[in-house]
Amino acid sequence: MTLPTAALLRRPAAVRRTAFVVGVAFAMAVAPSAPPVRGADAVHSSSPVAGRALRGTVTLSAAASLTDALDDLVAAFRKAHPGVRVRTNVGSTSALVAQIESGAPADVFASADLASQDRLVQSGYVVAAPRIFARTTMQIAVTRGKPLGVRGRSDLPDLGTVALCGRTVPCGAYAATLLARAKVNLPERMVTRGADAKATLGAVSAGDADAALVYATDVRAAGRSVTGVAIPRGSNVVAVYGISVLRGSRNRAAAQAFVDFVLSSTGMRILASHGFLAP
Image (cartoon, rainbow, N blue to C red):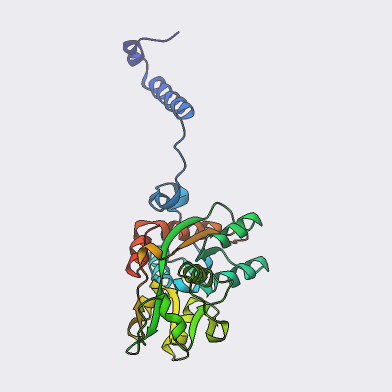
């Protein structure tokens, strides 16, 4: 039988305390659980797991075109999580995929395309669906002070040597699409190919190529060593960057924290400061 409120108040204090505790326990048992925190919002979660100090080492396998932005992202992440040591392994996306499939230790994979992420998803190397975290476009880079009259893709066949990324590298695939759209044919004898976007652009700044077709963000990062020639927006291609936690990670909590940090507003600001477009 349920006692009226007044009757309950007239009961001894010890009994009232017991009734209160039981009532609270019952309310907690039947209350619906809060929905899980996902994505960038996980960084701000007040749950015990999110608030726990992270420790250990996280190895990042990232596309070479992310090098400069990655330095700043890692520095900011380390400031937020001083107990975590971050190792970076940069290279061409295709080379990184081959390393991961060969068993190379890695916790997080950041690629310059989504096809490479999909490949690892299908082969079971990725924990959850990859997240898009940045975009960029393509640009022509020419030697500073020696543009050789390059105004667009149609001028490239008139040059001596043009640097392109390897055929299987994302920036090489993007470049091939751009040239095909403009119906520009570059004989292989006048092409020098770089292992990744950084190496390809380096051929221009070193004087080994007259021009390169690379990411606009890499041209920006090169500073005064090269000059960028814009490609019209309507005929350009957009490079899409994906990031994921790898199933073989030995520090999955810290790996997920890094991915969440990249996707957070702070991570987006850092990427934007390097010229990357929002996802």
